[in-house]
Image (cartoon, rainbow, N blue to C red; front, side, top):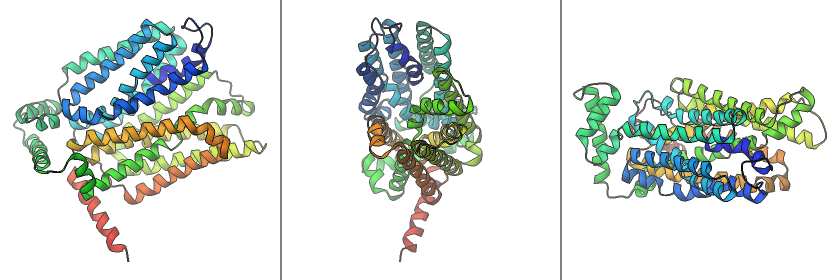
Length: 444
């Protein structure tokens, strides 16, 4: 809702009838839209350490409090300085949500549910987008802000009742408490044999980690399967950020405007944003329904290829349009919706799920924080220099670059990404090690 609120509000903030005493200037708007990425990088850097140090539940509560502060600032004042301050505070949840929540969800989930539950992060985010678009169109600014405040406030009190994750409790030496929590989460007795086996496995990993004298980064960089898992995660995460998804959202209004000339598609800016939000939501619902049936690998391959096809179609359309020719107006709208749907249906959720699938609980916080920083830097680079790049080489070549990134990701996933559905860390690392040995033996 943080990001969704801003999109329909920018034009209102610029107008004399807006909620601020004076209209926002271009400089004000540029700070409002960009400051969140800066603070997200700053606060995201130590988030992995803080999650491992103080616990998943504690940092989730802190994240929720930062959301409450964000909405409160805007309720008290919507002058430029106050909104810029609120957007700076928003950098905390914009990093923390993507670092802490996948870890928390994974560590409380059963092995055959972690993919579906992990994809709920993107599903609920897209529900927030669409809710913001619709409510901004129907309600006053103040009413919308009160609803925005209500959501994290209710969530905060619900989270107070939630337990810490069993894996973090084991890490703290609270094995008996971890067993009680896991029994509650699974709905079984504390003497259940499967429960005992799961707890013993977590304890075994913790003992092995404590016996290892290497630091967290030492384990990531020196342990061969862990290093390979880290490289896979980083490549897929950066590829997802550079698949052109953000740019498609930015250029959606332009595409709708050009398409309207030939297909009588007359939508107000708010209705355009709502349509995009609906496509996003449908994509993430699709991912939640099938991720445990198809597996991570197949879903990632098909959606990255589909986004690539959509980007290629947009590139061709922009190229033909720049040459003065005319293509059917439905083509860019269809290509744009295809990109948005496919990205939400697989590319986005899988890039978060694999972090929790590929790493032990001792490493998840560090890897999540590092990949989140890379993602935010990627976003900042695109937002800052996209227009310059388009002026230099043309927008059609830029979209072609996005298509190439997607096709590269598709091919890379086919050959290097191990299926992680219903598999333990040991099983995944065993597969990674076998693949590496096979690759080395095939080298002449």
